[in-house]
Image (cartoon, rainbow, N blue to C red; front, side, top):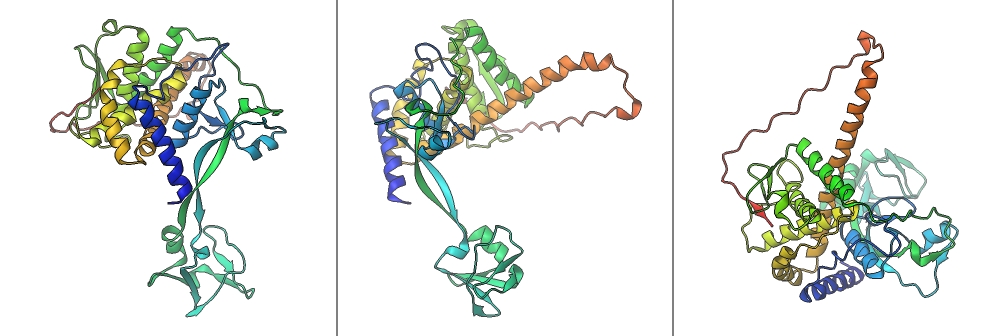
Length: 387
């Protein structure tokens, strides 16, 4: 691990720890700004891709700290490619990215042909069928033997086993830190009605129900049961506000993404264990990321009960928050994908009456796909992942 990455992770973790020790969860500071709001997760201004893992968390916290209404970020070179530049005196936010070193560039790897060591004349493409050697000879990769630390590999095996991933640090700027960008301004929306925000959360819940999750109401606890693959919520009128209900639901849906038939995270650890605290941190970050997408503003006071255990996990492992953010990114992306499935289903239902009114040839009728396999009930003791 490079010192740059170590310093970056320590810096970010120390910042989060200091915030938690003061009783503040740095990823929950609200999503609105004066004059409007651009709801959404941090994403690259050029590619449009949302950042993931620790980068998503770092940029989201930085955006909230600085009050940026625009969730788009880019590098200095990307700003120049868009005809602009970074404003004078603006400071970047460090982010991580991974690069790959192919095995044939490693100094501790030998490549031989018929027992004689050879060198490559040019860099081959991945999965190349042949390579050019330094003497100009074109050779089938199947004739080459790759050796590392006394072990011999075929070319294909070496590509799978000997390529090295290494981390680098890059620097990102929010588009509001730049000038002269040839880019469409982000539409600043006035605060959306609460009903629209709640509807966005309900769509996520509906998507998870299509995915097989059971959602029930009643009682005075909110929890996810892995054994029954069910989220249980108190009745809506037991919450202080609709957003309090929605925020709690997002948290429990975050737990549900870890189910065995979904992302398969370990959910059976007992209360008070580091593993339990880590799962609670994953669900907390997932609900925070989901809040950025839906616009729900909710800071659950009950989450303060977990701050102590989170601090123990974070202080004991400088990589813990990045691992949790990675799992939380996968979790919220899973939830968003399921909500999109609801939109597709609604579009199909709307179009069906129109299709029925048009004549359809018999040979054009396509049989519906077979229903998904029914899940077999498991006679396991019920374990609940509770807020």
